Length: 280
Ligand SMILES: CC[C@H](C(=O)O)C(=O)SCCNC(=O)CCNC(=O)[C@H](O)C(C)(C)COP(=O)(O)OP(=O)(O)OC[C@H]1O[C@@H](n2cnc3c(N)ncnc32)[C@H](O)[C@@H]1OP(=O)(O)O
Image 1 (cartoon, protein in one colour):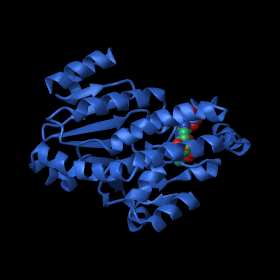
Image 2 (image 1 turned 90 degrees about the vertical axis):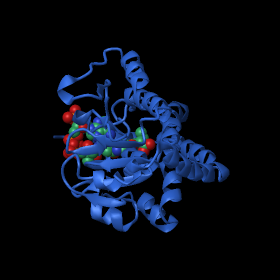
Image 3 (image 1 turned 135 degrees about the vertical axis):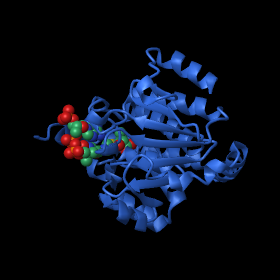
């Protein structure tokens, strides 16, 4: 734990150990990290004013935290969630990425986050996406990369990339095809519709619809947390080895290349323009 504290302090530079949050809370620029004494680390995407959209800063912080948490024995479980009550994560930051025009420019950003999404998927301990609000586009891809998805009743979820003239750009479709029945996965991707939490549970994408409050989910993981970290890691290794044997990473890379091609289309750029210029 001390090493993690020292690392985060060094990495985030202006890290402030926030007393009013109590022991074990660290403020990054766009991700707040809370270490709970029961053994779970909560990562809070902290851009509520942009519905917790993923920008380059969030990518870099997420990658660093995953690296540190993987080797910290006190971390038994990761929980990813969003700041505020509106959104879990609204996907890639359309404003930050609007200047990516060509296939290669898009591929740089998409493959950067694709590597991080794979790192999250194969994280050596159990991971939970606590979907506290809208999970759209890449937000659904991040949730898919987690082992379990718990959604608040009012959450809305949608692989909406198709409405922007692109496909999933970070490898989330390849992961989805691993996690729920192929027919259900294909329907979620092709119709690009927005689903209520209960509908997403019926489709098998959400494991549980959970109650209000920060502890509305902890019952789901309390039995995991009773076991030694080594036990949790051993079971997760079985899943990761299955993916390694089946070439999951290669399929994610191919998916990212597909999206990069579509990203360069006029349809995509027009769709982004419409979103960014929509009247309030
Ligand atoms: C990069 C590719 C990636 C991938 O799949 O690989 C993707 O994720 S593509 C992006 C897919 N995501 C979307 O299309 C979602 C876009 N956002 C929305 O549909 C809505 O914002 C929603 C439903 C998430 C929330 O709606 P709500 O009415 O609650 O809020 P506003 O729309 O008024 O937004 C508030 C504020 O946040 C900004 N915002 C929201 N989402 C994004 C985003 N993805 N990128 C950048 N900015 C976003 C929005 O522009 C507003 O900002 P303001 O400055 O106040 O106008």
